[in-house]
Amino acid sequence: MKKVITSIGLIVLCLPVLFAQRPTIASGHFSSLNWIVLVVFLVGTTVFGELVKNKDKGLNGFFRGGNNLPWWTVSLSLIATKTSVATFIAVPAFVFSLHGDLSYLQMTFGFALGNILMVFVLLKEYYEDHIYSPYDFIQNRLGIRVSQLSRTFFMVGATMSQGVRLLGTALVLSVITGQSTILCIGIIAAFAVVWSYIGGITTVVWTDALQFVIFIFGALFALFYAIGDIPGGLSEMIVIADQKAKLTLLDLSLDPHKTYTLWVGILGCTFFEFGSNAVDQVVTQRALCCRNLKEARKAVGFSVIGVATTWIMAFVGIGLVAYYHINPLSPEINASMVQEPDRIFPYYVVNSLPNGISGLIIAAMFAAGISTLDSALTALSQTSVMGVGSILFPRLKFMNEDKVVKISKMAIIVWGGILALLAYGFSFFQDGGLLALGFKVPGYAYGTLIGIAFLALMRRGSFMGILMGSLLAIACIGWMHMEGISFFWWFPVGAFVVIMMAIFYDMIVPKK
Image (cartoon, rainbow, N blue to C red; front, top):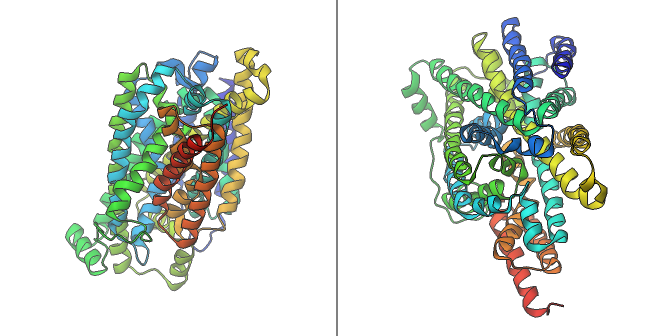
């Protein structure tokens, strides 16, 4: 109970800072009723997290929930983790932008296929090996050195991608309070650390499930009011969007430089989603918390419905296009939106929606952002302490589990600080918007990780062959980046290069 009181105290201490608004160009007035809704959400989620935490203080309880979490809860947590704040603010911003349209929705085909691939390819192997992470699976098949290489790639990729997502949530807070981005980053990181610290993966999964309910209702409210704010309703919204060429959905172009095409969605995005499920501990950790393989398959398969949130928010973007066509932004605000396009939906929520409703939707954005961030903190803690740490410091393997859990909790705090610093750094590199940035930054790491996972499945590859393949894959991805080739192609190309190089190396270099 002391942890709950401490957590609520942290919230109360933050409130004077938030209420002392210093409006910026792209901020608005956030009423007292909206603040009440937001604060009730933050305090209520903190209390809820304490109430549902796993009473088992051991490692299995902290990192796997004692393998006793219901599949539907795990599935909702998977959706919440993969949705992130990018869906809430970056998808509408992309549609609203000068050259934006509905073409991003082609990526949802790959999101669905990637989940199905995970259900039938690697999930069974993970459960049969009774592992804590995919890197344990790689270690069992390919050895310690390869597993450490994969853990390194994960920690680099995860910190980069989660730094972007933390920035996205902080931008929401910045819009509604007028405070600086760096202060808002610190506040959001603090809440994520508290929720992860309280009860490990069990608290994270249950609070994620609660937050999914909040943000799906928030998305539906946003769509409803976006349509209601347009004279003529849905039909007029579609007419305006069509006039502005915003309704393009399918793009059959074979140009690899185009970011969102049908082929990118079916091939590139499928590899990206499969990688997220199979080798990203942020996501995989949840699938390993189910009672058995059958329930894990149901959890991962059912999480496909998460793509519906992306479709809802894309049509919210269409609503914003029509609304601001009828009610143009001032030149000053418009210039600000060109510089930071991801502020457009939070700006609309704060300035155009009724009190209470806007508070609910902002709470939904927080739910999407923090649910992803606290998931990352538990995954990074587990990987750094039980993976890298136990090999660098062998005595961790023989230490009392309660002490290891305490060390893991300290790691959560450290990783929270690292993510906050990265988020602040990314605030200077938003030219392409958060949607593109969120996919680009892990691209160098995750393509390589997918290749290593397939090699582990095949039980093929030596450390030197995989290391050379990884370096070559990074070089190829760097070239693709400079050439402007769509970042979704980085994932299958990176995986293919690692696999081919590892197999070729083993053919020409005899084993000792």
